[in-house]
Length: 456
Ligand code: GDP
Ligand code: MG
Image 1 (cartoon, rainbow, N blue to C red):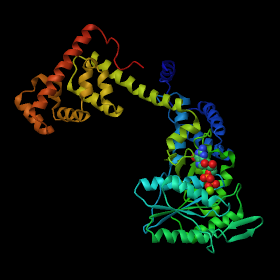
Image 2: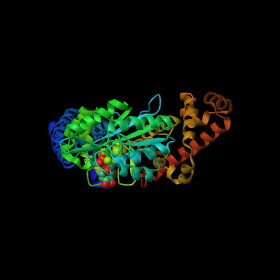
Image 3: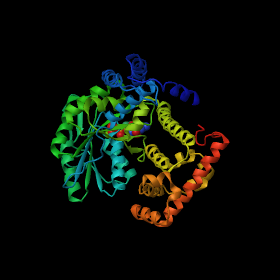
Image 4: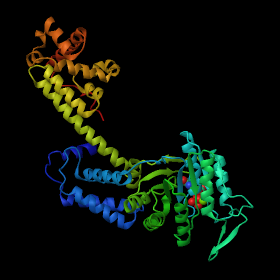
């Protein structure tokens, strides 16, 4: 790691813009990483074009080398596309909220119905699952098993009903339907309403490849029950076929959101980027296994680093940026040591830097002398820093450079101005006096042995 940082800081002196050759080398690597993650080729092309444009001509960062900077831009763009429109289920103003599932056979719709049902139930909803896959003889039974596992009731066509199991219809070339899925969907929603289910989840049939007849069936179901959400379920392992499949379903049923399934497998999840890029629809959930519990809300940032497979690089970038902030802080404390006297103005400046870095304790640990007060530092309430800052801000410039001149009446005025007790002003001045003394000692001792907090 320290080698990396040396290299990073070796680049510190370069100013100006990132050059084309800076960008080219890294974009080539990114392109390979995306293809390796099975992002569809046209999406890779478009994506790298955007990154190249954004990166070329970007100001050279002082904290990162050009390659790291390009990767950072790539990551930002990825997160943006994957999560540009992050949201979860939208509920209907008047229940029940109807959620329809669509996707190829084996994509994971039926499994998802159970997971989604359980997830909603855990949030206090009362979902009902509706079995509208009447294409395969045991599809209805599969949903019933799934519902039982998830603890969510299932509405299914009954034997003997006109639209039920017994009503086998020939619906086309080699297609048998065990009833009318559109009618089942309609009745399922009516049942949901009658029994006060606030959400109705409709499981539908799929085929191994996009198929006009089944797409029409899905479109008919959509038209019949007017769902609030149509979720397109797609297998993360689908690879290059993601674009065509997603576009066909988008045209066929105009889905409102995407669920990525089988993310527990080897797939790096390029399908997520492909689908999000070509449809612009939000990815809402991820399915990560066969069990009901293997389900989560989609996280764009996790997906981005999975696609890039550069988790380590991203961590390094973060570290480099933080180290850069620390280096600046270290410079500052060196400067304080070289000054005649450490004043309350320096104190204020310190606070400004600390705020920018976001970690007060860490920086305080780096201030000369402070590391000996680890325990006290750890006990510090960060809000106390705000109070200290308020106190110093209530002092006049003269007072800040001549703290010893701050007498009783001045202390009372400062306390009033900053809204604290006089005792707190006393405490601050006492602590500041100690810090000043320590600075003096360290100057005599010649420099700072082992800058605390800088060990990586
Ligand atoms: P459907 O045809 O779209 O309804 O797909 P199913 O829900 O029947 O799922 C097809 C197969 O994939 C089943 O064997 C499921 O157990 C399995 N499956 C579904 N989702 C996942 C997942 O997230 N991870 C894994 N490993 N398997 C899954
Ligand atoms: Mg199914």
